[in-house]
Length: 63
Image (cartoon, rainbow, N blue to C red; front, side, top):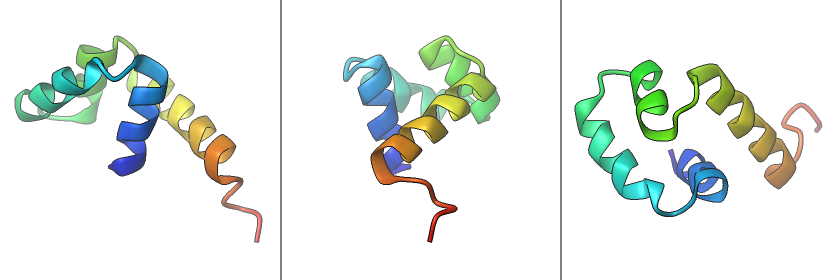
């Protein structure tokens, strides 16, 4: 969850954190949470998150 928050802050701004925390208690799944908070599909958010992880921490497939 830590890297999801890092990515969200880096991409959508620190101001989205209160909305994210509130929505965590209101939404039943990622499929409804991510569009409600960030206005993007789950697929788009996850693709951006994966790109962020690769850019920040390197390719996980490389030994």
